[in-house]
Length: 618
Image (cartoon, rainbow, N blue to C red; front, side, top):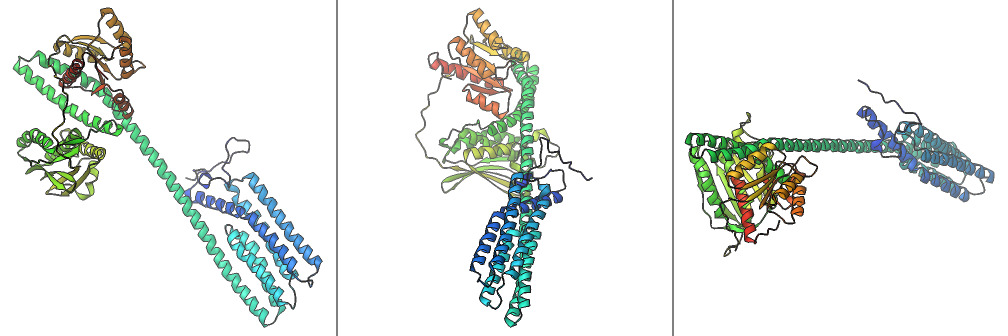
């Protein structure tokens, strides 16, 4: 299908960009690419042609004046004056054309017409110089004849550089001036003049070939330039589209994650309450444990999504110090040995007394993901974890006898949602985020990850960690954490009725005195009516009002005149919201919150408050 571009009238508010403007914006994008590019090239050629005009005209006038001044009295003054006047007149005419062109800034579609007008001007100049070859020729004085020939050849050579952007303009100037010179020397006769005439003919042919080649080179260069511009613009568009798609994906995941985490959060709290209720009923307790296991499996999937969002948001802060690597190795052995035995596999951890420098929590997460991934895909044999010293680093390696990873996929496995051998998307094999988290954490810690894999025989993942130095140990002030929550006054703010009920019931079973509200104003009113100050505040981040949880907490602290131990709970995974929540400085838990984790956080905050004599710094 052919599409046409209808030109707008002169009184329209939209106009086509002029020739002198950036060529990349010169045409409507509806035109076929070849036609569009050809028009852009022609427009840029005309721009170059007119850009050279002032220098060309100055050269014409200067050379004409010098030639008339040098020529002997054998050429009458009237002839000289008449020819010089003709030269200056054609230069003035071409200068007027150049001024009009500059003022009008013509459209690219008019480039060809402006090229024709310039060619007419060049033809006039060539004709004047051709007439000069006859009028200024000095018979019998070879030195002045050679001077005239030198000037004509110099002007012709200069036109190769100034007029070849538009080849008709070059022909219009070059042919009349050089052919006239050849005719003059042929007419003069004699052996010397015949040789000069032949040389002029050779010069004519060689210069035309050179000019055509230069014109083609310029056109090809412009074609390549605009092709590159188009490629860059296309790349920018595709990059922008990819970024928009990625942002849309992140927003969708954040919204879906938040909406799904709300009932998951309530389910976890209710399961915790139910377990307290049926503690003495074995069959009901077994059923509750199965529900809890299913909840924990779903929670693990949500946590993988959350980890990716937190890493992308840049809210994960590393805490690097020297520690013994055996601490992590022992944890891995304790955690994964039962799973390996259950699957009939060997899980071997080689002890090490080395000290390394890293963040133990984040490094532990990397090693857990690598170990879990190795066990997940290994069917026979086993997994070995050990350390190898390399110069100033320690290479912690995870080796398995699994199916291996094909070479073409050894980079892909570190991308989100990429999984080998799971076309059915079996959820028991995760979401394909484990190695993506490993890659991001290794970048955060500046630890190099390497992979060697032999399909059919197994894989070896290695992470290089800087060596540390042994120390007597760090003195840490630990608070004595009490396990009892009897009589603790807890204020809960959440706009989800189901969550408020579930959390209130769970905390009351723990012995807490609970005050609930769905807004800051309602909570302050209830506290004022009961004349009480809570020992701890739990607040959801996203509330139904125009104020988020951080603002609500700050408002309550200001109204009570004290900073309460505070837990901020969020189901958001959007990077900007995670950054804002972490920047608040409040302890942060992510939905769905496991009852044990909530209880542990409450105990830590309350113990910290007691250790500081009732005050807490948040």
